[in-house]
Structures are given as structure tokens and as C-alpha cells.
Length: 360
Ligand code: SF4
Image 1 (cartoon, rainbow, N blue to C red):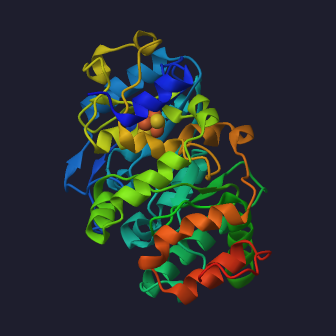
Image 2 (cartoon, protein in one colour):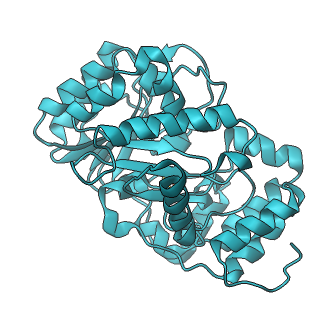
């Protein structure tokens, strides 16, 4: 049976097919030292070896102008990461290298050299930052570890505009609601700047996908259906043109291809079923993109854009959503999951203009 997302796409009359590949997203493995499994399942000790890396490099070399997005926070732990980055830097057609950095790992003495190495090779850093104040978190130590690493990154030029070194932060809601890009970015800038002197380039508020650990959380709280309905209600046809899978392909540690990191997590392989070593970028052109219901997370209209790492290559794609009360209505889904006083203060900080009672 056709999935609901495909039915919605079909109704729009738009085709979800692959354009020329402009970004290779590489997941260098699952090696989770944090038991932090929201993104990539956390199966330990499965790392991309040199042979698959070589296949990735061959693919990149054949692709023309391309960005490489090294994905999976555990990629930082793969001992082959420096080799991959150094070789990518020598390929002229590679226009951008991005690395999703696990800030907690860098704080570990074994990896303290990493920021300097990344700076030397002009690698763009994308780091997850769940909140901007320690008071809102139970794990304060972890928050301060992240802060120290961000300060270190600033000290060597990341995010400071004194160099080309880009530092981007990513926020995903911890509950069953959609993030609001607009004022949240300002709040992050103000609080991280005033309290800790931290500056950064771009800020992306993206929704949590209803898969893996977050799906288990939703199921456990009885919120899966309401969250799915929230995503579906916010289906925005304009986002279909911007989803990252149109111009990107994702490869896992074994060389298997997927449309994106989310499809990798739900084990929805790219339709070719061929590994990266047996395919050329142009073979993917025009092929249909594999989807399932989690794809509604990329087209939810209340967020700034599709959850697209590719958009980091195209800042003009980043649209700031207006903050309005309609969006906060969606928070009724959240009410059973958080402390209501916190919710009220969060809501007021974000919007500030809403003084009406909304059952906070
Ligand atoms: S989840 Fe992946 S395949 Fe689905 S729309 Fe988003 S980027 Fe495309």
C-alpha cells in the first residue's frame, strides 16, 4: 500500500525525483560513547573502513561540484576521519566539507586536537545544541562541556567572521512540538552571547523525525498519533522543492545508499540497491525518491524549512518563519509532557507579544 506521504505528494502533482547530486552525506559509523541514540541508533563499533571510503572518494571525484556532509555524530570517533578530510580537501570539485560534531566528544582529551585540525582543513562545523541555559537541563555538566568546546571553537576563529570558518548550531525540540526558527535564533544568540560570550554563524531549528528513539518516546507517551497529525497538518507543498533528498545521496558505513540519513535509520534503501562503489552520480538522476510517513517531518510548514543539510550550502533557502500564536496552538500536544510553568516562560520568551491566556 502507498504510504500517506506519497499520497500527499501525488495530490500536489509534483514529482519527487532526484536532480543532479550536489551533496554526498557520509555516515562514518555507529560508535556511540554517549548512549545518545536519538539520531543514529547507537549500534556500537560499526565503522566505515578504508575500502568504502575509497569508493566514496571515487563517487565524489565523478560528481562535479559537490559538498560532502560527514554525518552521524559518532563519525568524529572514526580513526579514518582525518584521512578522509585531508583527501577531500585535495579534490578541487569539493566545494564544501561539513562535519556534524559531537561537542561532548571533543571535550574528551583524546579529541582536543580536532578543532585545530578541522580549522586547518576549513571544515564547516555543525553542532547540536539542545538548549541555551543550563537551568533548563537536568544534565548541567554536559551543558557546560558543550559551552567550553564552543568557546574553544570561537577562540580559533569558528563562527567569529574573522575567518571563513563556519560554526552552525542545530536545535531540535525535546518534546512533541514543532520548533519556531524566528525568535528562537535571537534567543540563542542573546543568551549564549551574553552569558558565555559565544557567537556562531547560522542557527537551524528543525523538527524531530518520528523515527527511532523519538518515535519510541512518542509511543510511550501516547503521542505518536497526535505528533503525526501535527506534521501532516503542517504539510507545506513549497517544502517539497527543498527537501535535501533531491540533490543529495547518503551512504552508510558499509557503502549502502539511502536518500537521506532518516531513510538510513529506518532502513529504507535507495531504489538502486547498489553500493556506492558500483554507481556513478549520473545513474541517480531522475530516479524516484523513496519515502515513508516520517517524510512529513521535512515538509511541516511551521518550521523554517525541510530538515535539510543541503540548505546549509544555500543560505538563501533559509526562511525565517514568522512567530505567531497559531504556532503556539500546536503546543497543546506538548502539555502532557512538560512542566507547564516552563512552557509558559518558553512561549513568552519566544514570542513576547502573546499575553492571552492559552491554558498555560
Ligand atoms: S525524510 Fe529523507 S526522503 Fe523523506 S523527504 Fe526528508 S529528505 Fe526526503
